[in-house]
Length: 355
Image (cartoon, rainbow, N blue to C red):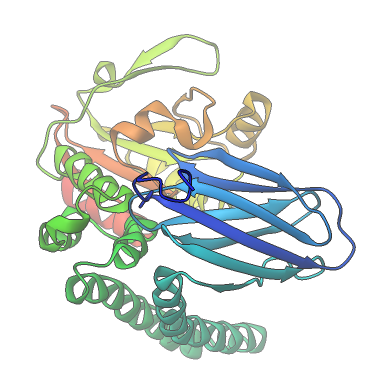
């Protein structure tokens, strides 16, 4: 009776996930979240009679993940302090049915709206493939413009969704997840508009940090110096290369868009290297052999450095790089004068500066 009358306070941070898995599975279930690019295990439980229970503690809604042993047995959901039901099958684990989380309901609604853009992209991709096979360059050019229009609409939707739902952690997550699309001028008004009630949430804080980083490396700011080893293991300091217009090119051997852009960068280097232009390649590779092989294969005959830390690359962190290819252009005294110059834009800028 004393236990029944206990005055223990209710734990308002507790999430209990009641899971069921249809099919033949008798192993473990795991609960994870992502933090600073790493997977953090929060809990684990044995699946018995197709059921399991996982728990976690959190103050704000956050994207969590459930996994079981096996390939692609992985599903994300929006956790919050509540009793959440997670129903799935062994054969289609990713498409779990989740109830009991209001944040998940909001996330589903957001995804439904985003699916409209995905459908537009799919249709444009189909048309572009057909035009390419037919050699219809005029149609391909028209479709490129349509792709750009959909891009603009999608990005604006993400920002507008956050501005009109400024108490929503889910809206903050959507901006954070897509933050590589946006510069500091896009993000700062959104971040400043978030309600104080969610300012301590993971996603608002990460956006605040990103705005601070992007402002520190905005056009007009002095470049942040760093030192990293080249392919011979010798340290190269960014500022040691000042004196020419310097392109700091963030890329990796495993990055398809980077490799497709490389011939354009090679052409720019060949045209302007004797007129005061230089390049420092910063690789996000993990394998030194693959990095060196790509440099040789793509004929990238300029300075190269890497710490072989993948997305944890030190220079990438300093410059807020979370998608590649990406680049910054410095003037001879080390001031940032342009960012993300690709294709004709790179040639046009160099022509403006050096011809």
